[in-house]
Image (cartoon, rainbow, N blue to C red; front, side, top):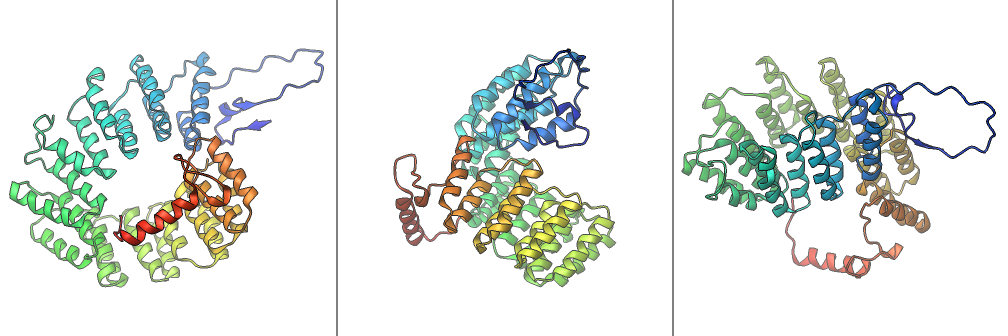
Length: 460
């Protein structure tokens, strides 16, 4: 019998969602009919869908089952749960199924599609580099009375987020754009951030100056983005200088700009100066966020000052700021002893912080690179125990570790398993896998090495 891992102690409604074999035992007396299942809690439905976010077939099966099996209590999926299901389907390029669900939503008054629905669609189209499909989806929004400034902003934001800022800029400044971009600070900030995400620092500087020439009124968010550009572009001291200019201009400073300043000063002058800025921020009545603490923890961990970073983690909890998986990633990235990392990993889970898929991939890669298979499987088993479905990156990290240790048959088993789930395995010459075009993985390796040697350009 194969059962679903329960996500919550309140999730008793999930118990019937299982696959049972028929019993051959003779029953002489019919048992009383079981009571109807209670109505499901939407939070539990969401958590269960999230646990299947790397297995769209199981997610969709559960999505349909939970509504059908609770029809007696008139349970219907909300727009939020529809949107989550759409995100999972679109992640695996099941866009036809997505549009089927959207039409189903449109036919219901209880769960109509909203701006978030199409923000999900834009994000998934653009992240798959299907830019024209995303633009076409925007033009279809008239059917749902959602073709407006908000949806256009969501489209531009998705294009800029996933390194299609050139297409975004063409759309924004075209004659047919539904939003007047002239002097529009919000739109210009999106494009500026798009060049930042692309890592094209010279274009960032050029666009920043262009905003001045156009007379665009820069706000605090504009300066925060550009400070981040300077910091990530290897000029943190210039970010500190720009912060002083922001203060002179009389902007009402917020925690976002201080978070960037803390990072910039830590890189240019040292973490002790960052701690000084942190104290100054608190004295001004600006409450630190999780990002503030994570920035300081990372700076301390980068200097191998783990005891101070742990003390800050405890301070964070006392101040009512709950650590996230990223808080622990700072420790994992700089720790060099497997036992120490595993102990920290256990502490993370015991404290109620749920590991993200990035956590598992980071640890699988780290232990695999060191050649330690036992901790690799400890992390993998913990992932399964917590009901987290591995994604392609997790599978590839495990398979790489197995191949490096010569466990080819076991590696092939996981390679076939991920392929059965619709995930994309890496071509590996050890497993005899080939590219879609029929080229061998060995040829790919040689081609990649040649490309790296002849095109030594950093990609951010």
